[in-house]
Image (tube, rainbow, N blue to C red; front, side, top):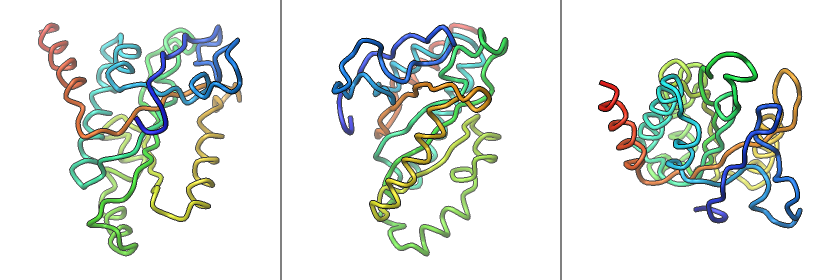
Length: 199
């Protein structure tokens, strides 16, 4: 995994959110602060206890598959929003979508800025958050790791600041990081098995 090994996802706080850091851990322990790195299968096991959540996870897996189809095959994603909260307890409803940011390099076929810009404009299903939400239940954003480091830092600072606080309450909270790997076969297999068991 980029930047470290998988860690256990901490329990929700009494406010129903992931803690921004693990209480009592050393401040120098990078694995004890958000975003918490984990594998998608572990994330799925933790956060998909209802049919609504499984549908959102299926959308996330389909979105990741669509990104791979255009050549985006490396990096990582930050996962956040009500999906990683105890939404059912604190809001009295299931989450409606998952918020995510993909941090990756643009595909070699789109290394040229004009070609990349054309891909982004021609594929709202991958790069327009309203469209990705409608199709995949993913409020999805993209950070190109191939741009100048100053821009990567600025984008990371913006998204971390936004994603690390609840929109309505400004509550400081944690999020999840999963690797963007070549496939999600393990998670797709789990979802298929659960669908078969339910029918």
